[in-house]
Image (cartoon, rainbow, N blue to C red; front, side):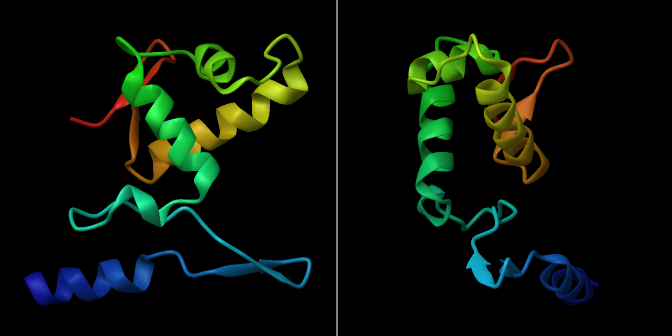
Length: 104
C-alpha cells in the first residue's frame, strides 16, 4: 500500500515546465526530506521573512520586509500569489483571517 502511495505521489509531483520556450523552475511540493534550498531564491527570502516574524503576517508586512512598494497594488499582488503558492505546496500555512505563518 505504501509503495502504491509513493508511486502516486511521484507521478503527481510537478515537473519542470516551459514558458515561452524557456525552462522555468516550479515550486516543488514539500516533503519531509526536502530542503528549503530547493526553492528559487525569491521564495527562500519570503520563507525567511515569514519565519523571522514574531507571529502570523499579512502579505503587506512581508512586502515591507522585502522592500517592495506595498502602496502599489500591482506590486503586492504577485507577492501574495507567491505566498499562496507556498501554501499550496505545504511550505507555509494560511490562517482563516488571511495571515501567513510557517508550518508546524
